[in-house]
Figure 1 (cartoon, rainbow, N blue to C red):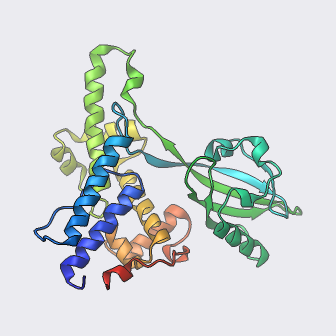
Figure 2 (cartoon, rainbow, N blue to C red):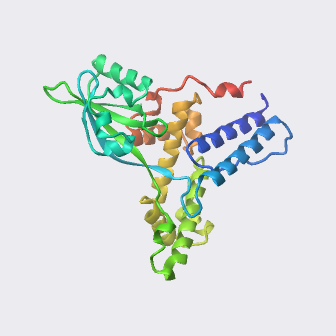
Figure 3 (cartoon, helix red, strand yellow):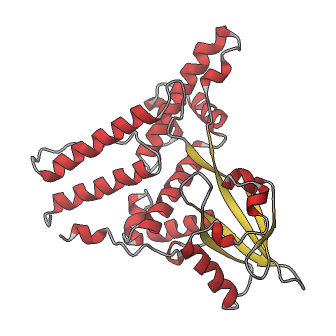
Length: 306
């Protein structure tokens, strides 16, 4: 394991597993000329990704592995004992609970134990409000979701205000929904969607690299700059560069949260030339710097030293 090429292969395997964990099954680890146990693991990981891609995603949908799109803040009002007094209607679609399942219930029922401890610490230690921290919420039928949460209060009132930036899964394009439209244009629409899907997958597979210019991308995908730029914005409601930047920052957030990989290494693994640039972009995106995040005690870097 101590040989440099083995360390590089393990890092690549980590990156692949991160992509699979976030729903991207299009990546593959390049095979090497080595005939050893690591190469066997590489083959198995690639096979799992292929099987997951084939078994999970329905035929007829583009943007198959989907993405998270962050939308407007939702709010909770808590009393002094951390019970839910009220909330905005969007919370119901975000968490999947009914109004009766939330009103009057302790916030502890919909956030993780660690997040509850963080919330209590902020409020019990007399930290000046408002303050933004990451809390892990527990949707009714899904895995925990980590969101940025602004904690505030009201003048001359004891209530606590939680403002959330909530992620929502969204299928950006489903050609089956257009079956009843004019058949004359259906092939063109599908061809455009497939083109943009290829660009989407290319970006997700190369987040660790600088994004090529629009001219280079259009040449790579055999189209013109206008069609590529406008097509991407039509299907994904954002620019190519903004999507690229958001995705690599979200991947970096995920890696910081669940691993012990050094922050400078994470910045490089997500395509940033230097740590200051990464830290500035991260803080602008999430409201806090990378070194302010609570990290998982499991340090994957120890694997590289075995």
